[in-house]
Length: 253
Length: 296
Image (tube, rainbow over all chains, first blue to last red):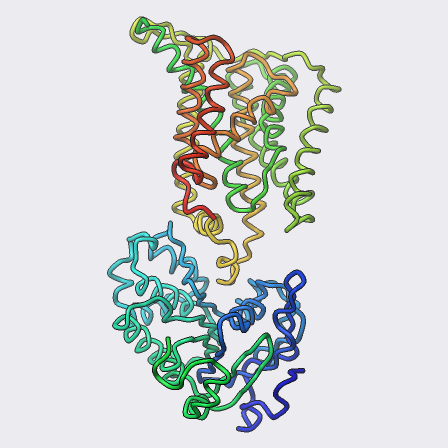
């Protein structure tokens, strides 16, 4: 159980059945106890933000959910237990991942990157939608992904995730390292695609988090330090300062 | 140097390069995809050579050409099987434990050499080859054994076949992606372990065909023929760039030619040392290899 928060989770308060529910998630790395019992629920068809200072355990949480790090605890997606499954099966059961550093396959072309993620007939239709949202990807289909700009690589990483039959998107810092104008583009795309998708979003840029997310969690030293409505958090400068170490809404990166 | 010596050395060096490529390409893909240094890879080469020798000397088909075709087929299947069996039987159960994986492939290699030596002695075994391998043609005044050119040509065909497989099939796409970022391939819902058996089988197949050609090239097969060439194959893999098939081909040509020319002009053995020096220079200047990706 999380030690700092005993109140109900946001989905419980709203009476929503969560799409993803995580209980008592622990991760050890060598001697370090990185995640110390995380509980979190992600409500369907909305964006849930995962916030916190550097090193709080946000990326570790996503990797543990994917099975890319050894972890203990309970992970339920749409009623199905995932914690015993290998990574590829978790993905097949509906988790798609957009990693922090995009992790597109740089030696493969844009088209090959997308083709790799397409494993069913329905993916063909989804490809059309991806090309609608990111016309740049259609234009640059035969270009090696390593030669794309950071923003274009982010679009490819998002597009690739959208091709999977995913019910939950794990998105890690989609705006990290991007120029402000590119951030706007990426955020606009995220807004469009998150209207009907469930997302767990790690984001350092609080303005972006607020724009996209309804509910949120703040991690601190591997535990949940706060959960609730993101607007409430960011409108309280003292709380924001205390939990995230920044002055408040808007002016953080 | 006279032109004919040059041509002879070049063709021989390229033949050697072809053999190195057949041995090194599988090694490179296996290491690139799985981080497994497969010391047993030389044994795959040796098994190909012995399969050919057994068929050529024990199968009662009168036509040498037909027998050689059968030998090639048997060696191919044997290589494919031994590759798959080593991966399934020994590598997979130790998944994630790289040190033990390397040790076990070394064990398989030693046991294989001893077994073959026990069964067939350590003497070189020769076998009759089709007429075409014994023909000699004139190139720029040099008398070139056609077998050298056949080795070069076969290696080229297999190089292009491998490149086409990697480029135009879904399995190839998964292997290329997996060489770059295995975790992300899994996160896309792809069972990357299925590709592990495949690359071992492909590696075994290529090495075994190399073994057949090698038995002809070196005029006989011994239990250590694979192991003797494996050290140069390792060097080729590192110079070419781990996981890069084109890099492996390029490095094989560089190593094969260097070895031949330096051994001829500076004395036997100096070429081998020069190749090791090339390895050291590569590691200093370009540690990811000639065509390797970003160092990980």
